[in-house]
Length: 102
Image (cartoon, rainbow, N blue to C red; front, side, top):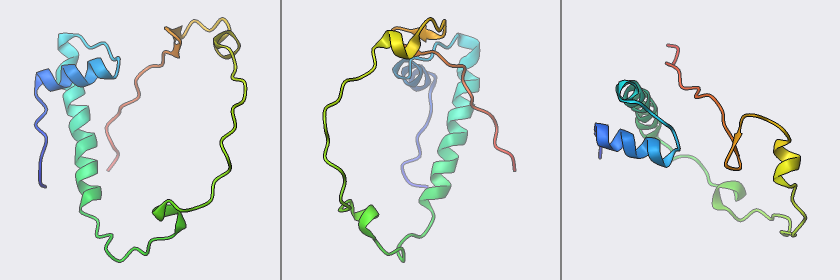
């Protein structure tokens, strides 16, 4: 467990701001706990020995992809229509962080 991140209230507020998540003071500790849960999963994944995994074309990034072509996009009106969940050109959704099942 190298470089363990310590989630302070200030760091949680910054992450929430960058994620465009509005948190009131009472939600900060819950959000910190949820982020810690995610970080624990990442720590577990970092402990997996991948030294014997053979690289293939997908992991090397050398697979052949189609050419990029510029095509017309949908307008915001076509995408969002009259959906009340849109805000500033984005869909607004409820958060979905829950405790993992063991």
